[in-house]
Image: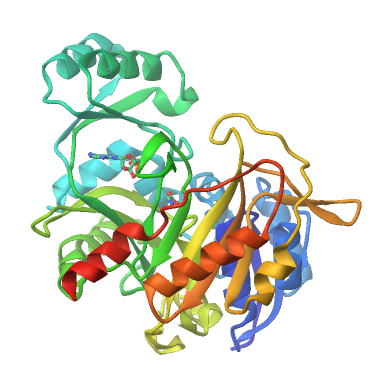
Length: 433
Ligand code: AMP
Ligand code: GLY
């Protein structure tokens, strides 16, 4: 079927989705709301009131839209897909009830325990149980992990190595330092190992997993400093061996897709499993998200070979068609995020950016836009994460080297980035040959 698609979102993840959708044979028209200046090369940017589902549905009807793809978690958690579906639209993105897998950590943990999905031992506490929560972290083994229950843009998690830090984290969350998302908290055991992200595209019953990826969440080299939305990623991730992938599907993805259906809210969209893989290869779930990861989607979709529009459409219509992906690509991609000095705290906006064209002229380089705007005809910074500089190559070492060559072509006064993206993956490849 020929698809006329509305994609919702404006970050680097959505830029990668827009590029993949536009390259799909089945996509005849692509609209993006609100999008960003980098995405304008792939589709028509439209200003829509995303929090008014009825208005979005009316616009879709006027423009003969056949498929809506929702990128970020906020509209999913707010129930946009339910409203659009009630108007008869095909939507790639879970219902509000299914999005609780991300919007409530307590919901996700309970479901995992009930269905035997491996995850860290935990307890949940409401504000009324503040004293109990503090007593609990006083006696808990260190490090201990304290999480705000609701959506907090990846920042509502404290991994405390000291007792006092753990107690303050509990107090701060209950005192509202993460807004309403901290009204309830989860305290859980620390998992050691290396993280990886898996994306399962599902129609609610069946699923397929795209290339595995590894994110780099801390702001500083060697995983130091504050947590961010993600400073770089690569795919596939060597830590996810065929054996790890098979066990992750058997022990994590399949039971979770089955559980969501059994509970009456089938998961239609991209189920993101954040895994911790320890030295002996055992797998635990760190978190689930109800959408693609950012920045992991940038490398994952860059190496995805097939008709992504048809894949998403088949999932949205309840009949997942794995044949839409031609084959698992042999390529590897590495994305280095260029951010604004000060991120993940405050940063300046409106700083002119130069060299994007030169970077792309190197070949097999894609510069995904995350936080940019156009001012007086030139690109300027407009966010904490500005660009996702992505190189595609046949080995991880080459992809990494080329991504950094491209990074060197791009200049703006407040440019910061990590210099160690993909090094863990490269060391792992070297160890196994
Ligand atoms: P989350 O928002 O749940 O993904 O947590 C953000 C980050 O905190 C994760 O990507 C991990 O790096 C870290 N983290 C969360 N939970 C744990 C845990 N139980 N053990 C160790 N690290 C964790
Ligand atoms: N890269 C982490 C996330 O998308 O949640």
